Amino acid sequence: MFLYFAYGSNMSRRQMRERCPDHECLGKAVLKDHALCFPRHSPIRNCGVAGLAEVPGAEVWGVVYRLHDEDLAALDRREGYDPALPFHVNRYNRQTLRVLTDAGALDCFVYVARPEPGDHVPSADYLGTMIEGAEENGLPPGYVAALRQTPTR
Image (cartoon, rainbow, N blue to C red):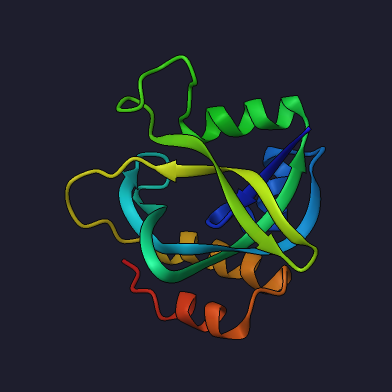
């Protein structure tokens, strides 16, 4: 079993049911000293996709899931992460970061996007999936409002 912190489109319950049917949602959490960004282009979605930047004092809200081995392997494939490959080859790299929940601190796997040059803007559909997940998981209204203000293409 693994704990996974989702801060992008995987916050969506619908999307997680499709990708990881055996997951268990443990609830909302916050990652301190990081900011949401869109540092790379997804060839699958044809838009900018979510990533993290270390920013003192900033917060990224998301959802913690409990995953089985099969779910984690499916997410690794979907996120473009292969632990056998060098860091600079993967689209996302899996790291362990500490998030805070109502029940206390948890160490979770987090997919961190490997930045690419250029400006990357999410599509309205991709951002809409993020907002859907944020709302259905009860993320703070101010954070949801900030997501809604994110420019799209």
